[in-house]
Length: 428
Image (cartoon, rainbow, N blue to C red; front, side):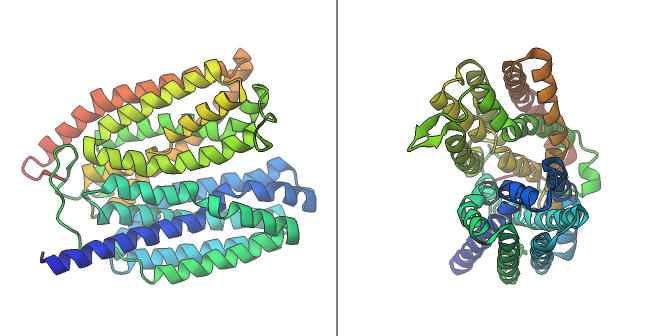
């Protein structure tokens, strides 16, 4: 590739990456700003909180479990039209869904809106992550981390405006105008979204620390691979512990007696923790992704999840003071968010780029599976009378994943490359 062509390819792939980040920011509030709408809907319609939260469960289910199909369609349509058409599809659905929420006068309408927004968000998530792993074979961890950070921390840009609109004009106006806005911007951005074609990806820098497959495996082949199922189990285990912290942070702070303690400019411990946790969750994704590009995926997993185990233990033994709670919770989120960069990158390293969108999304369904583990935290608290037991189990789970990464995943990955493609291995 000539110098001029190399420069053009580099510019184009960074443009595609930042457009993908923007798309993720635009759908982040579908998940992370949902909580702002719950009480206003409860007050307006008399629906119970539990009934309203069924909509959130529907959103998570459709956003997670349908991504392999959406990823398959993107790969099938090809780089020229796959990303563009799938972002258009997702943009229309999330826009329509939030407008529908604005006019929903029954729970059934609200649930339909949740399903549509979940399908739309999943379509965009799958497309952007798939584009990132394909465009950046040399910086895959960083690229996926930045993309995932857009979804993890993007709501920080919209939470305050949404709260202002809700308080001034009502929740229906917020649903309507933000639905139209995010849908319209996604439709515009979609026109520029492309996947890489032959000759448009820079030659990978050879790095023995991050070996990559020279052939592309179909999803059917991936589902027969022990390496995939090992990654799936590892992701379920570590995702489950992080989702527990996400779902239970407010009850934990309340039971520790620190929830309403003022710690910073009058802000309570819980409020500060929620803001800091979102920031740390977002930062973790590109940070550990970039580290993994240099020292390897398994070693980075070992570092991150060892720190995660330590953070759960610290929360158990020292989290009953306000600032200790904030710091321990921040460390938990900083050592959890990286799963959304490390695991898609590892999957693509193993199984190639042609079907990377579908394959990475098959692995992403582990997030949906892990959500079923969250209620067990409450059962354990009921049985033991303490959150300490939950934190120790979470710490032990992280230690188990460290062991699996170093002593099971690494040998399996090496055997996968040797036996499946003895002459086809390349490093990045």
